[in-house]
Image (cartoon, rainbow, N blue to C red; front, side, top):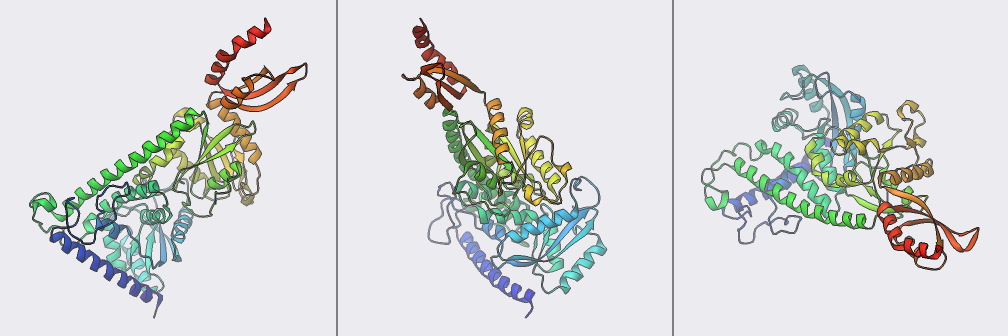
Length: 504
């Protein structure tokens, strides 16, 4: 039995099970219970409550459409090479795009790329995507290759019509980058916030597939105003309403998380601890950089796309003994719809509100220039011109850049190898200088009495770099500090009168 036949048998069993579950849900729907009207009763196949803790019922078809079979796939990856037009990539090549699409596929458990090819296309928006001659050739090749159980197209999001046309012709499941990235996000989501954001990212995906849901009967009329919201409403119209309602609930749930994050941010601001947002393309080494800067043993960097989906905060100390918070953020990637990025906008708020942004690049990657432009393109939508001008660029993985070009490294960038420690001392110093400038910190030296409350006050309200006996006066200390302007004014108000009294 061929590999494709084995996969087809496995998937046929899964499909039969899903159809059985779908049929059962549909019967429940027709009998008056599906949770759609919020007042269903009885047992039934009630889905998991929405992640924010409400008692709302999960919409069954969302999971059915968004799920990818656990059995895995033997994949043919086709990278469309757009010849011209606005969707043609100018900063990269089809070869590098193909490599990235293959890496995305390989990130999924039990998915393996067995064949890959680049296919020129004139218009990626046409129903069959490829020219008639190329389309026939691909149909023949896929039919002849028994080791292929699925096809992944290296394009952002296929329309419902394109997906149906390609699946009908090729007789195997067809996926786009959006589907693959979404599944990776689902696999890697661990916290409540990440799961909410993945659920929100599913909405536009499902919305684009509505025409394929219950194909052939979505114009069937369903009666019962209490169930579907009015006599004569079609299945597909009701599902649009369901999606809209679920999207609203998810956004409300995310707003709650956003408010909690805002409170934590306010606490950090009250404590005058500067924050540094570490951003970059996926798998550029952001987490490894943060671990090297903070020494946080709990951080476990992975050589994996989208290993981090949550913003995590890690305290570290700069050379002047100042405490800063390093924020690890979700990675960027090209060729995905803006709706997927927008779903994770909350994770990037820390970059917008941070005192400093550090952009980590994988300088060893052959597509490093295009990756940099992709990150900056998104950051330009979020940051002010001043924030953009203050970004610290870190060219990481220098130890792997044996064949790299020095032209890819800007003169002001810090070259590092986070694994080997190269450039980390310089990076700490550069971050320190930038934080002092952007956060309004002051570097001061005070001559204070050894006895009294001044030293304790400075340790509490500022960063004490050093405290040494005064060479000319054994009863005083010379204290070097980093202090905010507000704290400096409070210090003067509290102690200037005492110092004047001692001098008189």
